[in-house]
Amino acid sequence: MVDLLTDKVVVLSGVGPGLGRALGEEAARMGADLVLASRTPRRLEKMAEAVRAHGRRALVVPTDITDEEQRQQLVDAALAEFGRVDCLINNAFGIPPMDPITTLDLEGLRTAQETNVFAPLRLSALFADALAATDDKPGGSIIMVNSCVIYSSQPEYSGYKLSKGTLEHLAQSLATELGPRGIRVNSVAPSYIYEDVNKAYFDWIASETGRTHEEVYAEKAEPTDLKRLATPDEVARAALFLASDLASAVTGQMLNVDCGEFHA
Image (tube, rainbow, N blue to C red; front, side, top):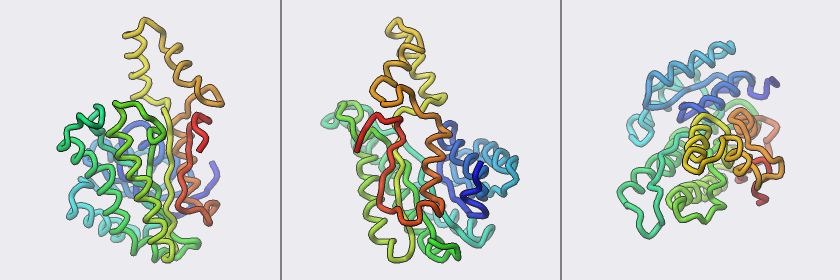
């Protein structure tokens, strides 16, 4: 693995299985130290073990990112341990109600927006001073984990699309506001990621429709140019490119990682 992030400090919110774990492991392989934030201490410790196995440091900070006091404590803990922050990855996600938009339960939608939109906004604002102060050039960066759901018009995805569409606009606004301070803000948008959750989902579809897992996979992969689905590692590497010095002039952009399903 190329050491694209040697000695950089990366803050990662959301370290569950799948993409969260891949982001942490790939960042460590690229030479980064990690600050890990999640509400589940057990998951944090497992992720920390994986980071340390690659010879990098890991700080575990159990955090409810919807709580302002805990968000500030995350910033303070990261700076106390490492003295700097080079990249913030907003990966944590709360599933919105999966219903047509005119029937959405607003309380459930508000709860999802707290995690999916307001937490990334506040974390970005709270980490901005540290990101601007990093002594590396070209400066600090923020990465929003978005989704190709923003290109979908299926009624059941309307709440999901509302969260991710808002997050895209937030990233663009932050790029404009924080750019003069040397902070780049970008997004990465995967489509279906072939990981455990979607593998189980494909198994369920197969059982409900009398098909095999392989047939369901082929159906989901058919709209892509490469006729396959991206893996968590592939999505993570694309996201971390945006954190690296190779992307020093890239800001305000969203990179689709979807094997060519959408051309935007």
